[in-house]
Picture 1 (spheres, rainbow, N blue to C red):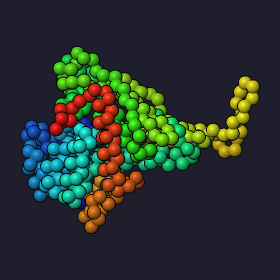
Picture 2 (picture 1 turned 135 degrees about the horizontal axis):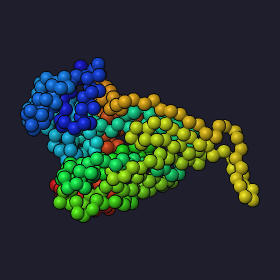
Picture 3 (picture 1 turned 90 degrees about the vertical axis):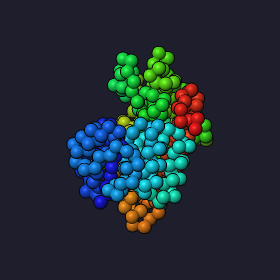
Picture 4 (picture 1 turned 90 degrees about the horizontal axis):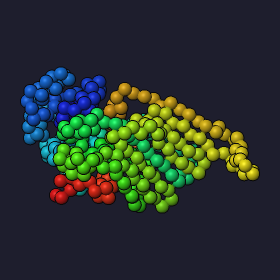
Length: 363
């Protein structure tokens, strides 16, 4: 049984605890909040027994085996390092850290301590996304892809009303790329590897908000990623709704799928044989021109990342090294570490081009 504590009292942390409580291989111990009353209430309402108000107490607790870190991005590295120093395995909410350098320190500490450090990147643990990856085998040589994710955030309304929110704050290492765009960057890295170069362009929040955001911050944006034989474009937003599906174009067929972070369906349209006439293209029919599939849906897709995290820890307990522990369909803990690092390198460069700086970048 894996005894899990959490850091943070956000809705996503509550969703995670819901899956822990439904999991037969894990148990929720308690949560950390600087507010003692909030820690107690949040913990007891979700069936926990040990609320925490100090990071050092959580890190040293003999009642805790692993920690889910659901705090703002700027706090992830510090909190993960403290937990790792206390011998705890860590599952860190996306984005794993504020930048690549911070993430490297966490992963190096975890390797030295022999514990699992894994990013809670939902699609990479979701069988629905795996189905999209597997469907690429039918496309032929991939030439272009576009990954979309955009959802208008109620936190943007808070910002427009003149109220501070951690989701739009450079000091919290947040913004649309770090919160939403990461769901397009990491699937790109998983599917295609690291690009040769990128070109990033933001839609920056209005200058009038910068007293609240503590600097220039993106509300939406795009990345063009260049590979030797293909282009991939990424589109993200927290200030508008993107209703387009994602698309991967091969020389033999084109794959579209809805919901980059939680795919709901996929569709393959085969090219067929194209012949030209004076005014039209005619296509022959050798195999079905269109193949469609509804993908299995779950109410809370955090169930998959939790299962893979628990499985990795159990493998370590059985004698497997932490880096070699299996962590899902795509590979080992080491594989997911490499995806996280490559993704943060892309986002670091994108933020540099967009003019988005976090205080932690200067350290």
